[in-house]
Structures are given as C-alpha cells and as structure tokens.
Amino acid sequence: MTSTPMADLWPTLPGADTRPEAAYRLLQAAVESFAERGFHATTTRDIATAAGMSPAALYIHYQSKAALLAEISQAGHAATLALVREAVAGEGGPVERMRRLVEQFTAWHARARTVGRVVNYELHALPEDAYAVVAALRLDIEREVSALIEEGAAAGGFQVAEVRTAARAVTSLGIDVSRWYTDRSTETPEELGRRYGELVLRMLGARI
Amino acid sequence: MTSTPMADLWPTLPGADTRPEAAYRLLQAAVESFAERGFHATTTRDIATAAGMSPAALYIHYQSKAALLAEISQAGHAATLALVREAVAGEGGPVERMRRLVEQFTAWHARARTVGRVVNYELHALPEDAYAVVAALRLDIEREVSALIEEGAAAGGFQVAEVRTAARAVTSLGIDVSRWYTDRSTETPEELGRRYGELVLRMLGARI
DNA sequence: TCGCTGACTAAGCGCTTGCTCAGCATGGTG
DNA sequence: CACCATGCTGAGCAAGCGCTTAGTCAGCGA
Image (cartoon, rainbow over all chains, first blue to last red):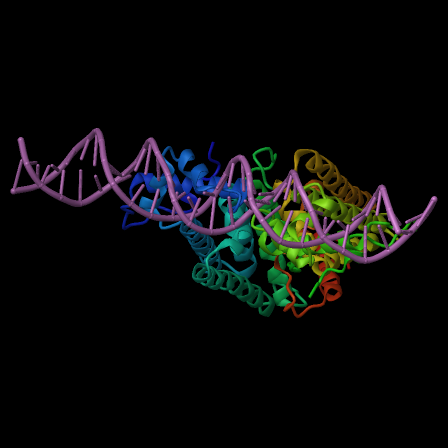
C-alpha cells in the first residue's frame, strides 16, 4: 500500500542505521497518516494502530507526535537538498544540469508524494526549533537552483528577466506535484520529470 | 490585518447579499484562522473570539465548523472559475488571452493568498457533499485552461507536446503562489502576474 | 404597554486528545 | 537458577474539543 518506500527518505548509508524496526514502522505510519489527513487530524492512536502497537509504544521511540513530524520533515528536506546538490554539481553545462535537476526533483515529488506532502504542507505544525532547521534547508535548496540559473544566464544558455522569480517558478512546479499527483495519474514519475524538464528549459529561454 | 479583502471572495453582486454583518465577520475570521493554522488546528473558540463573539454565537449563523469551511471553499472556487472564464472568453487571440489568464490567476493567488490556502490546501477537511461540488469546479477550471491551450496549439501560437501536462503546469504555478507568497514578498501581485505570464508563454512555446 | 423575535452569552456536556505509568513477557547474562 | 534490561500493553488522567442548552436583552409592531 505504501507508495513511498522509506528508501526515498532514509537512503541506505555506509554507516547503517541501528534504529529498531518498530521505529521505522511508526515513521512509515506517521508519514502516511500526516499526508492523508494532516498533522492535527492524525491521532497518536492512528499512528500506533497502523504500526501494529498500542498508543503507549509510540513514546518509547519518540518523545512526542511533533518529534515524529520533525524527523520526517528534516529527513525529507535533507534528501531533497542532496538530490538538488547532486544535479547542480553534476557533469555537463548548466542547461544539461538544469534538465537533470528538474527531471529528478519532479520525479521525486511524484514518487515520494506522501513524504512530499508532509514536507511541504505541514511546516506550520513543526515546533519552532525544528522549523528553523528546515527553513535553513529550504533556503539552501532555493540558493542552489538560483545559482544554477545564474550560471546558465551568464554562459548565455538561459535568458531570464529575474533570476529569483525564475527559481521560484522552477521549485514551485516541482513541489506542487506532490499535491496533485496520485496513484491514478497516467504519467509515470519519470515521464512527468522528462516533460517538466522540457517545459522548464523553454521557460528559462534555453534554445532546445 | 486582513490581506484578503472579502471582495475577492464575495464580489458585490447586483442582487446584494442580505447576510447579517456578524456572519461576514465569522467568515473573515475563519478564513484567516484556517489559512494560518489549518482547519483542524483551528478551534471554534478561535473563530468566535476573532469575530468578537462567544463560541455559541457561531452556531446561530453556521451549522458547524465544517459548514464555514464549505462556504469559504465553494465561494473561493467559484470566484477563481469566474476569473478564468472571463480571461478565456475575452478579446484577442489565444496567446493574448493566455497571458491575461496567467496574469490574473497569479495575481489573485498572491493577493487572496489566505483564501487561496484554504481553497487549495484544506480540501481533505471538507464534508463529502461539499467536496463533490468543489471537485466539479476544479475540473471546470482545468478544462477551461486545457481548451485555451488546445485552441492556441491548433492556431499555431503554442507548441506543446502534451496539452494536459501543460495545463497542469500552468494552473500548478498559479496555485502554488498562495503557498509561498507573503506580506514580505518584494514583488506586487501584479508584477508577479506579469512575470509569470511571460514565463508561461515561453513554456508553451509562444514566439514572443 | 405588551408579547414576541432574533442575536447573543455563560455554563457546561459528552467525548477525544496527547501523553503517563505500573506492570508483564521475553531473552541474554551471571 | 536468579537477575535485569528491553519493548511493550491496559488502564486511565488532565486538558481541550465541538456543540448544546437555558436564559438575557434590545428592538419592534400592535
């Protein structure tokens, strides 16, 4: 039933995670509940039941319901920033790298739409300290995209009137995918990524 | 403090509304609370207090908290559809009308961002019957945009590979404005609309 | 003057919420 | 065998929720 493998959120790292399996089940259940109903409409009983436990077991692994949200949000943002950095620092000219960035950014928001919804639409429910961390990550993402557009504009590959507005439009298109994309969408995440890549390059005035 | 005049939601009509002023105050308070904290995190006490009444007074004007959301959502969608229809049926060729559509759609989502947030991000909290009404309105909006793109493609003004994907991208860009636009944004809604109009026309392959 | 009406409030009901706590089963260690 | 740490449960608490009720009061037509 999960359309969002945890691999999208907690990619396998060299130093493997030693977290108990039950904590993963709780995270997974929280992601799905928060995405479907929103943070405030989700009860700790919902999450615990979906993870196959009693409500009290949640508090052995996490300090609070908000701590679960904070972990999901921070991991989701970190994964997105990593994806963006990889594309920006990749091989090829700015136009080619921008195409890859949009393809992967878009596909991620389609594939990991449940995580994406929590990450992008439940920010207001974060405790203040967790919000600060996440806001910094979001700023980094925006800066990476802006830098790539600036590089492309300087090299003559892009023609843009306002770099910041263009960067907003690029990230905006990708983020909003997690709102409208569903199981019933006929395009695969990768197809959608390719089409959005094309649209964005034209938007940025690239001659393709 | 309101950045969303009610005029954006309930435009003055020939047959003037006879609703008591207190009902308007409740609607206004509900829009702002729902936009800021979300439907489920907003209490009936929040709304009533912001409207300068006791909690019980809310139920004289509205059947329930959900009925308030339903009224806001339906009115917001109706206003957006009206705006889209006006642009699509306006004067000029498809490229010119698309520019106007994006300019106004974008500016509305920036100006009326509080209403826009409720309209676009609280759909899941709607009772089933109200959701059905709103879903039909959303489909109408999408169809209007698709029809205009198709018209432009047939006339040779646009070059698009997939009309539905392009239509999604156009509405998506506008909708997402209500998520990120704030009081502190340096661009006015109208400036943003003009810039987005330009970006969208290039995205659709118009020679401008 | 009077009874009536519509807008409102103070008080609070029944229920759900996030979270706690005492205790239980399990399995590794001496 | 005893011992204990770990992971968990059943029961339940205090707070807060949406909504209801009984009653107040200004304004108005007769």
